[in-house]
Image 1 (cartoon, helix red, strand yellow):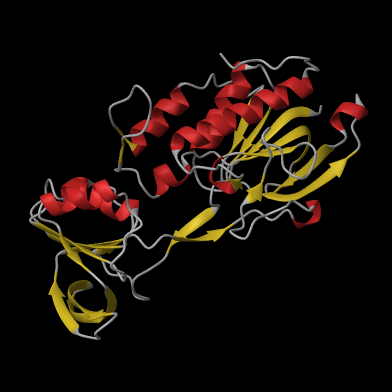
Image 2 (spheres, helix red, strand yellow):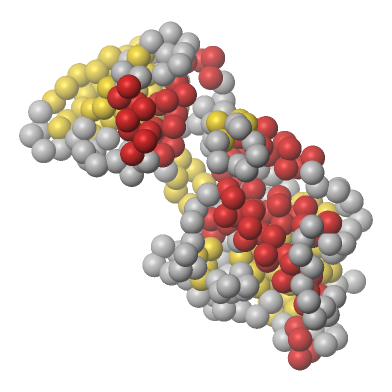
Length: 328
């Protein structure tokens, strides 16, 4: 049997697409390369406080994902979930019905060896399977890239490397419980929101700019005790003692490859989509961090809209509607 939709990726965009597809009574599959659903929010920012969701004051990343999953009407007979599974081949095939409407259906081979046909594809794989960019080649017990327990930072001297929103957001959060927090950034200018910088200064968070990491100065039993920083302008060297270091340099990405489909990408390797969330290949849609359009904004609310819009348009085609379902 040909299923209605394949959703590739189960981060926030994929989870909301799954909910919408279930609510609209579509059949399909959600495939996830990682061990479970949740994407970056669960794998990189599980303890981060999310503050930009409508009608919700604040939730931790893990709580957002848990609530999103609970909202899905799970029915494995209609939409099944494949974890630790990748798409290894995706081929366009001729539709078995309404060829003038569909133009393409798709034959998909998965890494578990299974093969399934789908009428429509929705790519929501975010930035892909990611690994954090490391501070040092060697792994130290107290140099971390993901926060799993905020209590670890109580009464600790903390260094945070990075200049984006994640670095500043964590600095503001950790300042509530740590003995001290220093942010280290290679440039004087930050990519983070100006309001976050002002809040950091008010909390006494020290901004070390423009400094970059040079080397570990002292260590014991796989614990780094101090490190050397170098001023990127004057070349002045500074030794800083610390208990814990959080590195927020971003991630390296391993994306799904669909070379044979001739999808259009921008210079940032994002899939270009139109106002209907459709890619350059008829029948393939994209939503969330993996896609780009002229007015694209990267946040959770935007990815929910894109996922909803994609699934509504897919359901319209699949069920031959003249007017799209509004998604209520």
